[in-house]
Length: 308
Image (cartoon, rainbow, N blue to C red; front, side):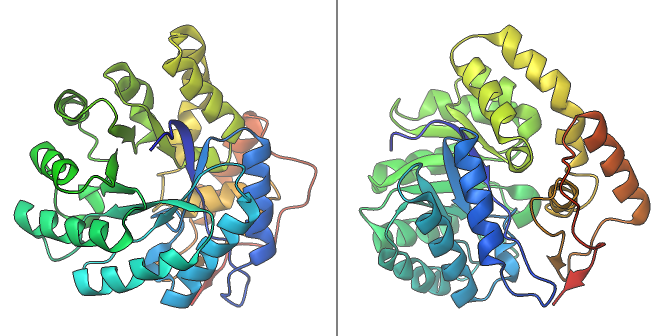
């Protein structure tokens, strides 16, 4: 896997009736690429993959891959807490031209042991081989941590397991992964607010939420850090740190969809059990977006609403 830099965990736009807004998703992909983003992740946590049915999930990935048209790598999010179901889903990714890697999070709710996670991810890797696999460690959502030693075992057992998105929020764990894994194995930070610190200890990039709203700026920040221009990287982080924090004033991706709606990029519809931010939070987001110069002359979509 050659991918490095800044990737966007892209949102999945919905129409008011709850269907996927294909045109809006295509437009977002084009804007992201035109803004210089390095790669795209479809149907991750920020893409509300947990509320998509199997055909919708596949359709969203197809839309992103087709719109990208080889201009940047596209990673397909593929996560399930049943290994049998995960393998079935993953086997369908072989149908999609343009998918260059699979990103899969820890099995949620079951709270498997390290051995259980090892077997789960190994089954996925064997199903999609030779397609590269990026492990996704996000214990805050899944209830389990993927220990660095288990990542090393997986890298040794399956050559197509070639990266990890580390979202534990633990900088020492990121450093340990960098130290233990071969140099060709990619370690990506999964927390925007830890991106510079992670690169400082050896991570090769970021998979970002904020890049949905500011792809150019997040990309420049990550590239500055990777090239050793820490003054530029820190200046960009300082300017946009409030937005990075604001994206988690409510459950992700509710705030980022609200900001994108205020920018005229897409609607702010989310699917239950997520609901839009409160009116007070929306006012705070609008004020912040205005202060950062993100609001365009395009009229925002209709007011917030949730869809089933």
